[in-house]
Image (cartoon, rainbow, N blue to C red; front, side, top):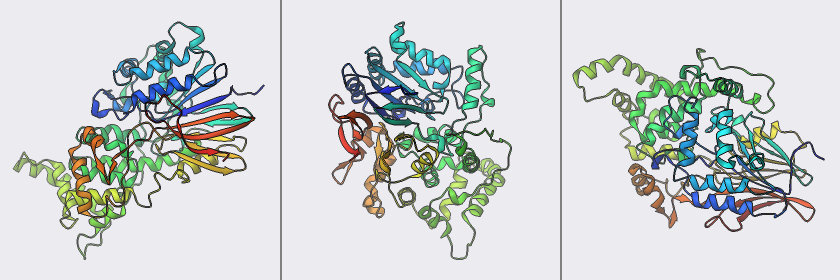
Length: 498
């Protein structure tokens, strides 16, 4: 008998992101496909033991209208709203049907967009919603929300699943603090918004991205948590220039977060971030090389760094804003800084600036290379012991299937949200980018869904899943794409052992 749960097969999906009470805030599109896929998993291996593992970011409370950065007093109402939303209710019904079936187990792992899942009151809500008073069905639901991930066995193979944000300096969870919130809620006490200090990625989403998203619904399809993507945000919505004094510290917080991420998986202690610490930042990290070239190339004699220029712009904003506002109340402070930035760019238009920012996004692009050993792969595999045969992460939204050697394998379960794929041909020059720019500036999700370039849909039809099964005495892992209406056999993309 193993020390860990044993299954005949497991199926893993992640980054579903159910959430958003406005249609353009909902980034999950294939809801019927997902509901049918859950039903398909439930029908596998009759009489056997089958687990469905939801590997983080199942719901997305950052897309909800909550006060502050974490739903505490609002947690129950927020999760109830998501479950009852017509866009997602069929998924929850499929999950309820799944846990009512004998030999089925539902595993729910925490991510960084659904941290409220760690609260006991939310877990009880979900269990009751899915299983009612059926004690057997309730026992088939398991939560993994302490940052330890989930470990199980399939045949003689040792499987480890974790969301992956544990090694992301932008988006690490402070599980110790989440436990404190859970204790507060259990004893009927609330949490003041000022008591919760969010990570840099959460601040980026709530303070900046959600505001941009009201105009450009597609913005978080880029998963813009890199320095080049911050430049994209600034170019896309000049009004965000007024928040430059927030953008710079966010980059600094990533530096602070970097000190913590190596404590996430095999935690040897906990370091609380100092809200008052002077954290060094660099504006060069906000602008990718193509966009920065436009800024730094303003004049042949201007030798200032991007840091100096951006800080000068902010200083100009602080000293000149009062005069401008008095002289002309229609000229807001965001325009001041934006004028400074664009003035440095030799008259480059917004379309060209956005093209440059997106080229920075795709610099040395290996986004859709399933064998690319990205940072998440490197850091997670470095932290996991050699006894683990299959490692499965999510978080990046980018599927991966990598042979680690020695009979060990790594998968990333990708995502179920829309994915945009930019190509070099689309970004080659201003002319080739023009039709893409027109769609992006339209801003609506409907326009994104309908767009086609080079005879291909702009939004990729790609919903990923991982399966690990015992077959003829050996354990086989597969990266698959769930296709059609989701009720049939998924399409195999990569199989290990080959």
